[in-house]
Amino acid sequence: MNMKLYLLITVLAAATAFSAAAEDLNPTYSPDSTYIAFTRGNDLWVKEAVSGKETRLTNDGTETIMNGYASWVYYEEIFGRPSKYRAFWWSPDSRTLAFYRFDDTMVPMFPIYSPFGQGGTLRRTHYPKAGERNPEVRIGFASMDAPGVVWANFNPSEDQYFGTPFWGADGKTLYVSRQPRIQNTLDLYAVNAATGGKRLIYHEEVPTWLDWIEGMLFTDSGLYMVRSFETGWQQIYFLSYDGLTLKRLTDGPNWRIQLLRAEKDGTVYFTAERDSHVRKNVYKVTKKGKITPLSDLAMNVLSVEFSEDGKHFTTMESNLRTPWQKREYDLKGRYKILEEEEPATEASGELVSITVDGLQLPGIIIYPDGFEPKGKYPVHVDIYGGPDTPMVHDRWINPDRYRWFRENGIIELIADCRAAGHNGREGLDAIYKRLATIEVSDFVEWAKWLRSLPYVKAHKIGVEGFSFGGTMTTLLVTTASEYYPYGIAGGGVYDWTLYDTHYTERFMSTPEDNPQGYKETSVLRRVKDYPGEYGSDKVMLKLTHGTGDDNVHFQNTLQLMDELQKQGSAFEFMIYPDGMHGYRGYQGEHDTKASREFWMRYLKSEDGKLTR
Image (cartoon, rainbow, N blue to C red; front, side, top):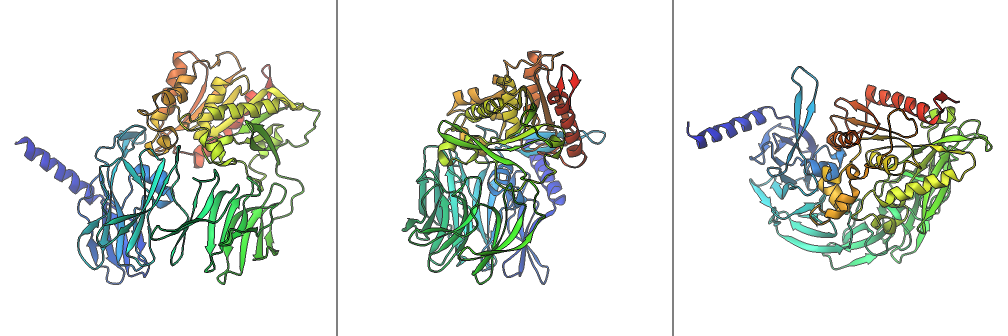
């Protein structure tokens, strides 16, 4: 048979099999409920809600060409897992579907093996790792009134990312944010859905990295957005739709701003960590920039819901001393408690802090039951350490979360580093191009602080973390074991060339641009001095990982184990077959039991004898 004909038949057969096995995914009603959009076989379809008539809007879907269904790196890092891979958006007038078309042809495929069944199975994910090819993306518009697709005027071959788009109120303009692969520039375009023509309305650039524009409020003349490029803290800006007006409304040390409501007089309601960087509160800012707190500054607001008339809002809030309360506020800050949990007899934890390089790093300490200041206690430190992802909040902690440590005479410390976000851009920018290095020194300072306490057993400090926390835990036990001799590290990244492009390169740039940084930050290269020895209980690292993890691949831990074995180091290891990024069900229960046994063995024993 002619080879070209053979290849054509093979491709057609594969496409037919792929289409036949396809499911209808992400069914989504149009705003007026007349249509339902969905993807089938990586093509975009619509169905008329009343008649059930189906129309296929695209025709080139394959395993690697996806219309309206996200490539993995967009699903994980840009749209987020709640999107369920959906990459299409109805216009407000229900007449047009905007969608992203992803081409994964040149994106390397990473296989994930499942051991179950006689032959096992293989999951194929096109996962771009640092320095590798990203998917090519086109932005299309499918009209309910005319056949065919209009493509936005972007060059898909450029090395770039597109953020989650949003429609203008008229249904004619789609607003699309774009970043180059080195994510220090952001452009916002107004794209004409009828022609695909684009117009730049906003540009931003910083020396390090930028986050996407998210959580906007829309008005007739423009939008309100949150950006952090100008003052080192997050601020609220008004941007007109034509791009000619950009006005900053706020000032001061705001972080984690969430926009709530915009009024016609220019007043904007929002939540932020402003008066405290471990508590979030409700504020309003006028068009002249006057900021007024509206909620109790001693409490930490989790959620806010405004009444339809905008004259009241309800919150769920708490702090470490006060269990959750549902409150109703008026716009002058007066409130009444609608619901509350049983009042606490004691605080769920105590806020503490240390200062490193002039930056305040917060923590929460939880003492054991029957704590005696004259006693001596081991310590379990709970960490994450990833950029702008704090663990420390002044809010009520469920007593069950750390009950086991309290009941077994172990002090609990929840600790953050400078990159957690409590210190704005100053703390975050310090880690640029050297991810997970300066953070180690911050956690060492926490250990030094613990050792200064008269009731802490300095040689019995353990650390535990998952994902980025697993990375940090491994680094602490292997490179700073004099401070953290014991640790449990789950699902960690152990070399940044093994993690995805969008996340890694945001903080590290590319391996080509920053080769020395990738060498210095590789956990695989930094464990050579790990002092763990068989026959000794002075230092011990335990690793865990799920083999089905599609986020941080099991490959990371396998390569770390290989390095530890090469140098004859002692370590413990637990595999969770088909386990994902976070162990669930019976695996989660097993992980909890196994972890507790580890801590009893290493934190509660002296010379091989268990102490209580």
